[in-house]
Length: 497
Image 1 (cartoon, rainbow, N blue to C red):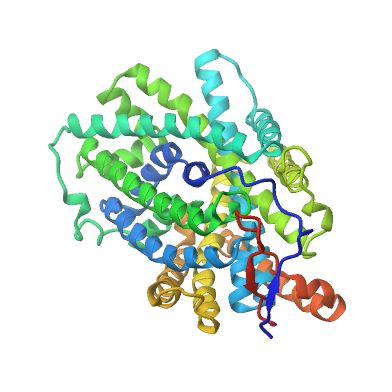
Image 2 (tube, helix red, strand yellow; image 1 turned 60 degrees about the vertical axis):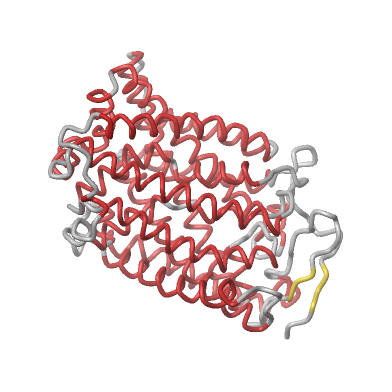
């Protein structure tokens, strides 16, 4: 039954509305970690897939995600909820599907954030050893990072935004200087070949799409802050559109500049030879050693910025699910002074620390296992959530147009659902390439299996709540944050199902 429901004034929310479009863009773009993508993602993409046309793939995905944003932004204008995907899918496809999506979101964002500690620990420890002769184990550095992120995650959201703003400005400037230097000092001249269809049609194109899609992870996080931003009806959509444009254009330009810096005929061989060190080698060749050394330092801050951004996203998922009774209610508590979802923040910190300790004790390689396994698993889950959210947008507005135009409520989300569904299938079929594993390896089905297991667990738990705890079940997805003028937001209750 779909009746109009006004939120209770006593509903717990995250903090006061402290942030606007720039701050949310900082969180979103920081999660995609521009320097991390340039140093790690792009060379790996070229090396593994053999596709020279990676720059064009970024343009294609940016267009697809811009289309997705049409429906996503329309949903954000009707529903302001820190659960984002979970809330949107609940309102569009029903409570059972919503809880299944919530469990997928939890495992996806947690694994994405926790996996980054492997890269952070390794790169920081390597930097300390090479520059300061300080030999520390990767896990000790990673746990130090966990502690710093925990302190910042506990504080006010606008403090986190200021920290990310500084780190992101440094990152962008570093990558931009690198890009311009490659173009200005091109050994084989400037060529637009990597932006052509021929360059994108040879090699493992499916795997290349997977790698490129992983670089966009986090662009959808703007809606997570809808209860903490000024004027959520406009802020979330503007921030998401800006983030997609910035990420897509910037990464396409960086990938193209890298092919220019090496020569398009050499980019694959150089990537296979130098790996993540390619950016620093090219930086030293075209800019100088001092800049290359600084870039290594900024890579550490880049990964840290991504850690902080994903930490905040996970804390808000815990908060939203705790508020509605899907997870234990203490997770819905917010700090009296900072307004942060501090219990959710502490929970995420504890999970991350535990995983780092397990991988440290097992002696596993922090990059090839913790980082590679967990971040690719998280990316796969988010792609699935994007496709499901697009389908939910179509279903939601089919019942009530709510003043949205046909493009935003029907055409755009339908195209996005089909396109992102195809990307998910391709990602699943090419998961061996993403992991660097052999075809038939147990990893290629065990790790993706966790996504489906989480979804099944969420569906089963929702079914249990429907029969055993109906009062909790009816609250699922029902909260919507207050508007900026402190009047109630009126929204339709989620579908039964």
